[in-house]
Length: 208
View (cartoon, rainbow, N blue to C red):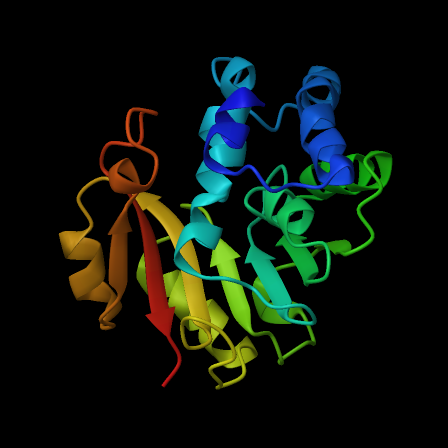
């Protein structure tokens, strides 16, 4: 928890309590349903929570906005973002039911009122009016954009134009070429220096 507060110091007491509860809850759920690797569970706040919160450092979400988390897995980046932005609505989508069960359980236990979690393929959700799609490295950029583009409304209601914001790592050159889009990249090592985010990036593609 300390590593999160090192970079973000304006949380309410309720937000601090929600973030603080995550470690125990994920360890408890992970014993029943393995959604976080055993080697990462002890570094939950760095490798999962702080990693997710790289997104607000490049783009602020305004109250009333609607965000979809594609392939949320155990709830990342969606749950940390929902705590960070209590007045923003989040839809967390994953095709694997047991992962959605974990997300629903944790959201309920920490009192997150702005999260809906559904088991579905992203192509099958009926909503088509999101401001942003977010994701971790669940698929190549080409696929993420093909899923996100049809469900994002064209607009610019905050720092960046509406679009896809995803967290990726490694050499992205070939992936970007194959995606046929021209994303903007932010180096996470510059955002959170010294926290082990070498060759990890925040990637944004705007809807034109």
